[in-house]
Length: 88
Image (cartoon, rainbow, N blue to C red; front, side, top):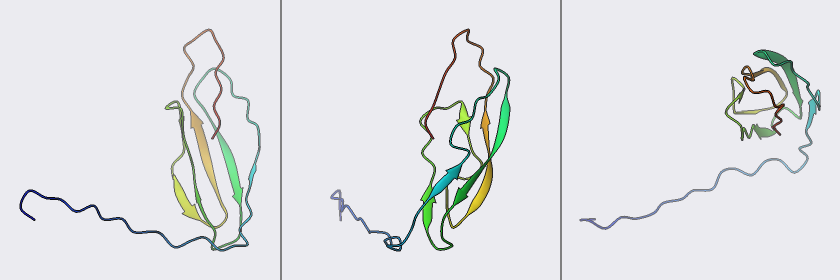
């Protein structure tokens, strides 16, 4: 109103209490070249999930969803002499 602003927040629907999650494989070792690996998320059909990517060299096609799914995790080529690692 005028130059004043109002902060608005709204909570999301909480996930069902019985959600459990597993991801396979739990460890992937890639060569230095650009590579992809199929990753499987197992959970109940109405349970929401989100992928947290802290490293820009790791990508997935979808960051959020609900229920079980599979997706390709991709790593870009490592041009360094040093190995690197990331938690996803």
